[in-house]
Amino acid sequence: MSAGGDVRRGDEPTEELPQENLPREWTVSGIVSTLVPLLLALSILQMVSGTVLESFEEQLLSYPSLLVLVPVMIGTAGNLGSIMCARLSTQLHLGTLEFSPTNPDIRANVGAVIGLAATVFVMLGFAAWGIGNVLGGNLGLGTLLVITIVSGMLLAVWVVLVSTVSVYLSYRFGYDPDDTTIPIVTNVCDITGVLILFGVVTVVL
Amino acid sequence: MLGHDSAIDVYRQALPVILVSLVAGLFSGTLLGTETMREGIESVPGILLLLPAFLATRGGVYGSLGARLSSGLHQGLIDPHFEWNDRLRNAIVASFCNGMIVSVFIAVLSWGVSLVLGREANLLELLVVLIVAALLSAFAMLGVLLTVIFKGYRRGLDPDNVIGPVVTTVGDVFGVAFLLIGIWVAGVVL
Image (tube, rainbow over all chains, first blue to last red):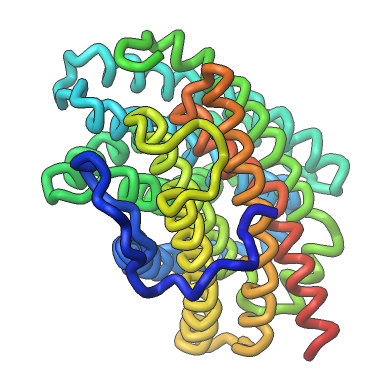
């Protein structure tokens, strides 16, 4: 267990010796005061997707295969977004990033995200159908595939947009994208992921 | 390693982890779909309401820790060997505080939203569930994340490509399970 018991209440800044002109410091108070307000705001937003889940509670409890979809939808959207953000922000730190659609780095990231989404969401359709059968769900394979592929691809495009814009804005406003973008992207994609998923579910079922 | 990976490179680097996280997500989805968890969802009002916020918070807290460490490694600010220096300790302590503060907030928030929506919810019950789940998560996430980043980096794996998936994978596998444990603890204590 790495969160040692010797940690102090981490709200006061810890004195760090200035090392060879570091671009930035890592202090507990600095990190906490950057992230907590953001996470609190995003948690409030998350209540939107929570409310959506609650309002579909009956359907979710009667079709377990839909419940199976929820964590994967949320997780994969966040994964794709965080890969994209982490790569973009490291390139930003290294000074090799320029925001333009012709930038090969950005293109590579976008291509990879779309490809990964296509791979994952097709598999998800089959898996959710299989698991749902075991748990006693009775949605058809076709229905589930339509749900996962349509919502998955919509989500992928959305993830690309949100990631790029949030890295760019974070940089413009002078925040470190490492602190800001992943929480923003994972949260935004969760909320929209759940909204997109249940939008598609509502249309299909 | 960085700079000019093609789409295929990024795809290939990320695919294994994404697939692992798909499996983990399915695992947690299956856990959600089990009889026990569905009973838990029904017996503790507000669980579905806080589920997305809870899962996402861990992603945000530990994902940003991972991204920070990864940039730090790339910049040469931290050594790819685990050693207790101020910089690393601050990053870890801060993420632990973040996780706890936000989890408590989520419990209160869910309770508030439930009240506003005219549903019943028990504040103390939600607090116990989330504090238990957040504590267990912190230990699991920090352990796995640090191991993966340092070991992976030493073996030439770019942490940028794996942090998110690793965080959500571990989060998925344990998150729902920890919520269940939290529900159980709340049931015993209250």
